[in-house]
Length: 77
Image (cartoon, rainbow, N blue to C red; front, side, top):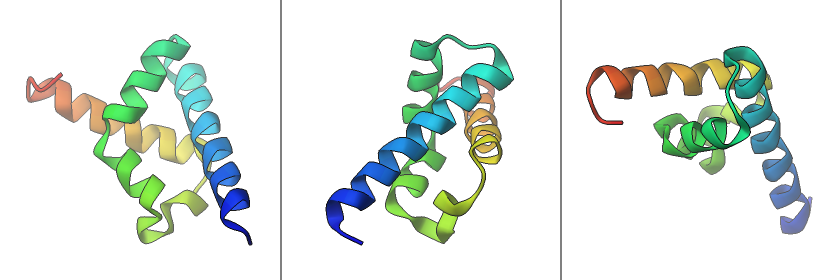
C-alpha cells in the first residue's frame, strides 16, 4: 500500500467518523468536526494505535463522544 493510499483511507475514515457523530448525536458538521479533533482518541486513531482505525465508524464515534463528555465534565471544553 502506498503512502498516498494510506492517507486517503485515513481521511475517508475520519470523514465517516465525523458523519457518524452528526448522525448519532444530532450535531452540526462543524460541531462534530471540532469534537473529533479535540478528542484524545482521535490522535490515537490517526497514529494507528491499537488498530483503532479497524473498528467501525459508529463505535469510534461513540469513543470520541465519551472523550468529549469527559472533557466537558472536567471543565476543559
